[in-house]
Image (cartoon, rainbow, N blue to C red; front, side, top):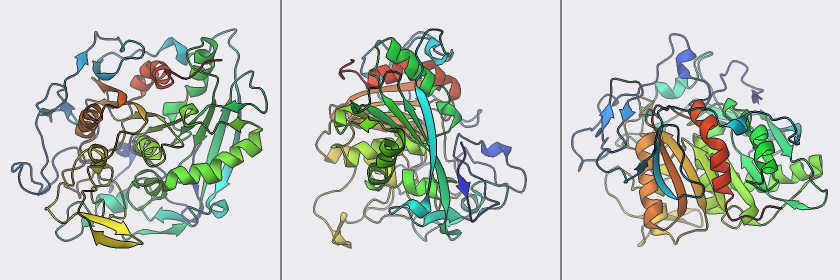
Amino acid sequence: MQNKLVVLAGALVSSMGVIPYALAQTPCVAQNFVVPPGANSSDKAAPFFIDTTGLDFKTQPPTRDPKSPGYPRATELQDGALPPAGAEGNFIIGPTHVPAPETAAKEGVPKGTVSTFTFSSKESTIYNPGLIRDDVAGCGNSSIMSTTTAPGDKSNMVVNTSHPGTWTRTIEVYVPSGYVRGTAAPFIVIGDGGSTAWKDVNTILDNLIQQRRVPPMVSIQIGNGGQDAQGAQRGREYDTVSGTYAQFVEREILPLVEQRTGVKLTRDPEGRATIGLSSSGTAAFTMAWFHPELYHRVLAYSPTMTNQQWPSDPALRGGAWEYHSAWTGPAGPNLTVKAGVLTPSEAPGAPLIPSAATKPIRYWFEMGDQDLFYPNPTIPDGMHDWTLSAQLMAKVLAAKGYHYQFLFVRNAKHVDRPTVAQTMPAALEWLWKGYPIQ
């Protein structure tokens, strides 16, 4: 299920961990995975510090030690084991990842129905026109792998190859067997629809529903708008720290799902979940954070809780990094936006989770010990270590009393497919704890 960029025929549709950059041919710029040139990795008190504690650079990306100083305490499980059902807190699993039995279709298990339709930016109000970045043909992310940052601000990437364009995405809807027309169904919204990471989702749901481990639910896989990261539609949708993407789904996608499939989707936030991988994992959390009246349950693989937001927002300069930590650059005044104007503020606006009241969000997430580390050599901003970002998220969630489960996964890379196959059934069961099963 690939998205189509109509006006940019030569563009490579990619996402970190979905289409490996190593597949690109020269003269493509390779991903970095080491401390970027000219970065500050020695002075913790200076701006844009990169912490390399506990990193083994003999592997690419480097391997992290889950017992590194500064990482939250976690329970290490026997190889092959997963946390007990419903358990909360931090866990270490691996290094072996065997697919869960629920990933395979079983004889006698009723199967849900699947339907698909497409949606174009020309039909959208919120994302019309779309956003397209001109990259070298065959070199995904080429224009941002060799760009620069704004003078004096290593967190602000300059992207001058981005322009309006048209995209078309595919929506796949799974309706559980036995759904009674007219009844309000719980559902999950899945970002990066069509990714190979989600290939077993419908089968898993068939099995879990039959075993009464999750409620009968609708699954809505929404393809991204195309390309990846700064200056592209996918990055615009998933890495922007605001309620816009949630409103896009609510106002433009869900009504179409109901219209095209005949299902009725629940309005109860307890019966609504968001799921994603990498940047769409961040978007899944962002949807619930900005709209807890819409979503209470979130699941993410390798969420990009780093500084990927573009264009840079002066009121939130670290993008999703500021969910858990302060911007790493030079100290400056607190800022907010009032009536569209950037205004000094007495109250700090970030980090977002520590400075806000606890929200009714139940969050399952994982991160690999070889997840991404500064893949782009041009942005040495102290905010692009994926594994560290997950550890910091676990810390602030625990401090605020959130219901969460975090897995640090040994022998796992970014959106690690064996890990997904091993953990998804148990993760979905954990996610839906407390919801009535019919």
